[in-house]
Image 1: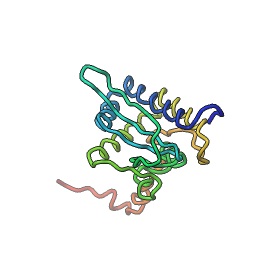
Image 2 (image 1 turned 135 degrees about the vertical axis):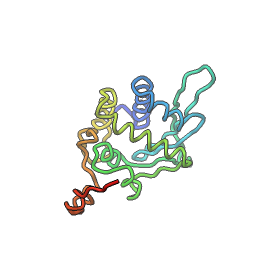
Image 3 (image 1 turned 45 degrees about the horizontal axis):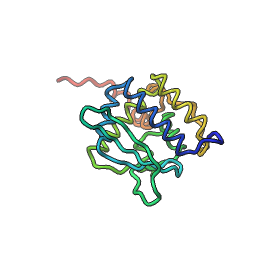
Image 4 (image 1 turned 45 degrees about the vertical axis):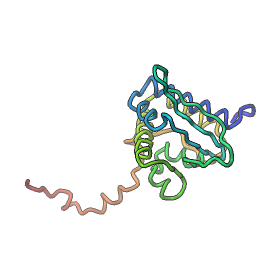
Length: 182
């Protein structure tokens, strides 16, 4: 991080800019964001930086996310570190792997978890294609110094290493070439 910018201010700025990119560049992702956050509050923790996000949309008014510092006693809904986030964005691990290995903690009602997962998947697919999201990611990657894992940025999905490809390679070729008549 630059010497004059606190992690809270930097992360707040990046989050708010990401919301604006989604608002104008990906209406599907923006609608998912609204579904997950409208009239709700969540505490996120990244490398010890604690922020509270609130989504509001009043009749006839524009949807907004407000970001404030979260107190130490606020119950977190999302916890991870920048290394894990960079590894997910770089395609070296999946979200599911990070959750199973306790590298990523997410707590929400089931419907919200599904929408968060959908939104994250859209962001992972859109990130390499959208120049504004790529620019935000590059800024985060270059300025957030908490982690030590270096990733150059989000890879397109087709270039990301599949964690379960060994299962496909374990299937005998004869089985793969078998035709089933229906």
